[in-house]
Length: 405
Image 1 (cartoon, rainbow, N blue to C red):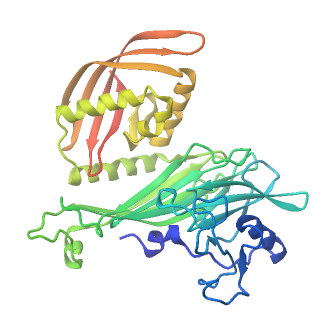
Image 2 (cartoon, one colour):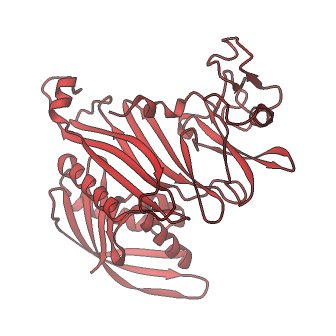
Image 3 (cartoon, rainbow, N blue to C red):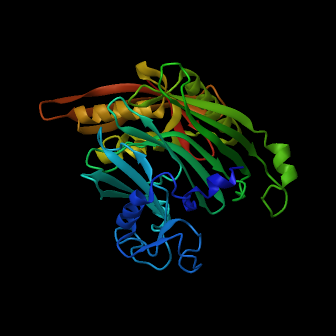
């Protein structure tokens, strides 16, 4: 199961603010909370300072989703870095309990020191930075590598992402997911699905001796499909030990001074982990389901605002055209370039053929589709053929191969 620390990351208690002098910290928290809205460790009142932390907001700040609501906001210790441009002195402060569940219960405040004074630059609701590390890029700015999670109706989710800021202080659109986990044991799904995944550690260390720290993620995963007799679908401790056999995996993302890329071995690990999940928890893919999936994928591929939905159609590791086996982030980058080059696109499915895949819950699809793509200078029309391999798991169908025929 996921560790207790991971399940409560979104509600993390801020630590003692001891890495910056109080002369620096005090104005930072006044900018975060608002003038007259700060309590300190000198306030021993449980009503005002229930967590007995060094600093906090008496009420949620005016720029948050729960502005001025009753109850204290929990800001984290300021995390120093260079987030928007080289040479700048900046900090991030994670602010908890001031946003709804949809925004992960909080957000992050970016502040910058200019001419000896701190200034609040931006607030990013939903960005949680209470468990982040930084990697210094060659341009002098920092890339964030953050752990996060969520709990909903008994399901426990974990995630590791890489994020960055623009020069204006807004959150960059690209959200690079490095790893994710899910635990269904508390939800007790009635269909017998049992998933126990845990992100055990996230480290920044040089793995290829190039002088740059890479990201190393250790995780475990176990999958089972257990149909119990009786009305209680939950697995007890004895049943969990019997049916769930965790395997340990390591994901390594190499840092080139600008971005993170999965190592060749990591791509194979992702493919192996997803295939095992599919073998145990997947369902047969029939023609109707496959055709509906392809039509949805083509329709979303026409819309520049639906890239996230398009990417949700892909597995974590995909055999993708000339690239070979790559992680999903490489596909996103390729599509972003294509969308920029051809901002207007129309696709229409012309033919569709389904055949069994190499694994139990896979299907091979050969399609022909008409296309019309255009930019300001020209328009191209024609037909194209593609071969896709779809893989089913407990969540939904995903593309694991996309090639030209």
